[in-house]
Length: 97
Image (cartoon, rainbow, N blue to C red):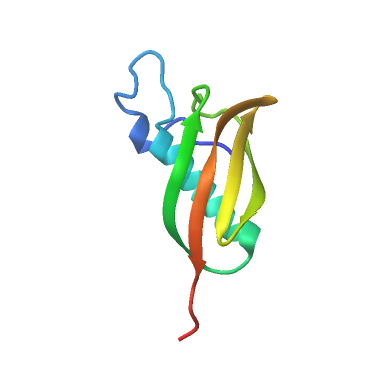
């Protein structure tokens, strides 16, 4: 996965030294969680998240998930073998209508 170097959120974040905003990285984690779980999800919270290092635009990164039980999903984001973020998502599966 990677964030395009021309992503709209990068303007002004930061001139001369662009860094992917944490909220954009979390959005990618949420998208990957939907694929990982395999059913439609409603994210109900992010009770914990820690950013260890910045992510440069265009840099490849991976998201690794771990089941924390009771609709809690742990995640780690890695770039070049370095953990750059980690946290927990809480979720509900979508109800059939």
